[in-house]
Length: 501
Image (cartoon, rainbow, N blue to C red; front, side, top):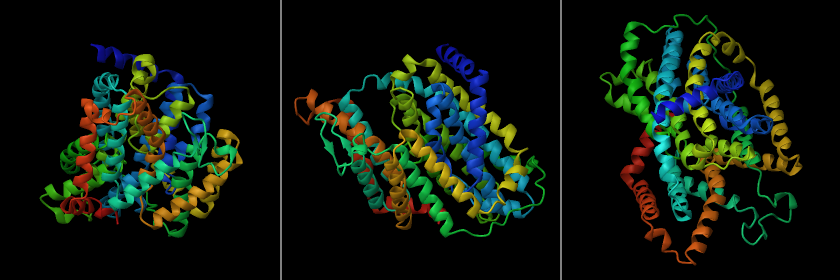
């Protein structure tokens, strides 16, 4: 009964005219940036963070959430029509979706992606509503030691689930933790690693780091690899899948939803990992694996369901523990702090309308996406014909304006330029930047809880292993780290991500 009452409160909050408007703006913006390769949800949300100063907390978070899962939808459009995924999580969709489009089944492929995403979004939203309250109750029992251990598990998991080399992912987390140390010591008040620049006394601007590493670096990469886009300009028709397509998509959608719902909770970009894992599973269980890569329905339905489910369930650790599961959730933490909200288990008790309003808005947003996206395909196709050399100056200008408007600090623009070049270098070295951003966000929290736990225990480090929950979490972290370095597991990781290359 409590769940029903809470959901009713959520739908009343999300269903207000103002919040419906911002949900619509969010999903439309998300679809747009998902369609246009080279921007991405992370950079867009980072650019829009300054706007949230002027909005109500619920409205701003509903809009930012809509951008995130809207981008998952939009990325599939470019993947299917021009073989260029707008979002990383749609890279797998391009393999079979584009082949379906070339066979004249572009409409069916787009509809399969939309239906699978809506079903997965509905199920995963329901899972968020079920599991968030009990997890919040457990989190209220956490002390400094437990939070420290939980963040260690999160960082280790982000290493395990990162693409490519485990050593490189470990190095990215370490670099992120080091960058998080820049600023003023939380207990002594002494400046550290500021290079004598007063503007860095409060630490590096999170928005500048995020926009540089993800936005500017991605623009530079796209300029280097710009190619002629083969847009399928023929009218997209047949937006309803055939009866045979429906039968072929049911099992992959169910499996993709299950995979995405689980992997989305884990730190390290669950939506991206979920789509690759789903494609691998579908290929393994298929009776006709030779069809994959040549227009298999399962190759579109499974990954699209998985990435949308992963995007939704990544809100569970954010809403219950205040711990971001991926870079976008890290930005959501930033948005909550801007609004004066302390992320964590107290949000559900102190601001139930906000907590349940965000959850209810996910279902409303997914419904909007299905209703709006298919009729707007013609518009998205026209946008895809705009040359990238015309788009990138506009994108960079908006990035710079957004970053500068946060603190009106010119040093933030220098930081964007520096981290943009650093992000591009990391991409060239095949280092995934997501663990870096997670390390940067969690670093200060990790340090604060470590030092607080040590003060409470009067300098006794055994407090981390004598408290049952903390000891269990640290044990999990150690086991995950050991398992990841096993040769057989390393080989399996390479197989999961092989489709990305």
